Length: 430
Image 1 (cartoon, helix red, strand yellow):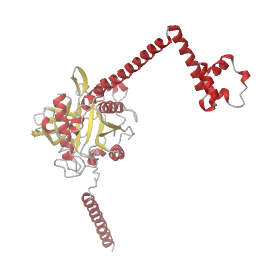
Image 2 (cartoon, rainbow, N blue to C red):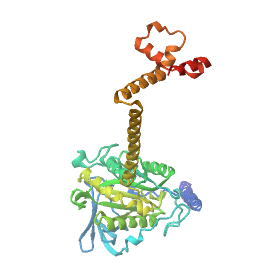
Image 3 (cartoon, rainbow, N blue to C red):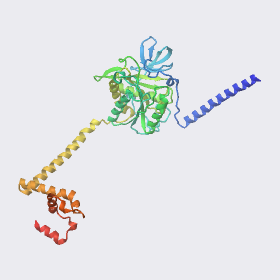
């Protein structure tokens, strides 16, 4: 009897498990039919080690040549597109080392940077409908790991809620704004830097999408100990290179990767050497929300904040053309504004000079012209500020000064208070 009872309990548990799996499948199928993005959680995002300093992985080819280093866990089937567009795939893991096999060379060129699809259209190889509004020029910037900092400048590799990476995001956003785009830089803290950071930042990313963001940038810094790993000299200044990260566990993976390739192609054309590469890793990184969502890594904790700011500022220059937006540099509008003000000043100056000349000619002498101006200003000042006050009922006129009394007596009486004969007599005085 005891064995039969245990057998029934086991069968019942298996039946409940099967039922749960069926329900999950039904919900997923319906959500796909309705076009709803379903969050794909990955073990890669739940385990510690993502951007944690002191823990980093190395990618090498089958001959042992180092291809890449990064402060994140790597998994079999992760891929990496190097700066020279060679594509590698991790085929086995040995400790913190991923052995990679070259699987081809990506054909990335400037011609691939066409205008992306707008709402109602589909991205190449995607099959899903973007959720942002057509024609939107709003960019969303946020930080899943807002504590990440730059030791040489910030004094620490982690400052929860106020990391140096927030200022890197501000530099990126400011440059985009100077090019004419609207940027929402959300600095909401998603601390602590633990396995729930991406779940918490998902709410921020969804909020940015609801506010009309056409593209999302989740900005981080890496945790590679070598400060020279990301440092490059471009246009005569030290900058950090930028790594693009695409999560391979979401339905937008194909579109996200195409978008990353176009960003890299544009950067390679304008600022060669700025992009370190594209990492295609296990995880979603909330990129299932949009086909134009990218995770950026700007340098490492061993680089300076200023190097990272300069790096993302250069990268911002290539974003508008890739998104199909026309950049409008603020400097291009300055000359016309200055010219308008100069024109106004010229008109005012001509009016003052002409009025002064007319007054001088009509008065006959400089002294008479000055006297007229003084008389006019004293009378008008009383009319504007003192007339109603001195003449309203209840005012003791004996207490006003001689100058005020004289000014009031010289001031003309408003026409509506004059009788016809008084008005004629006043005219005859002149």
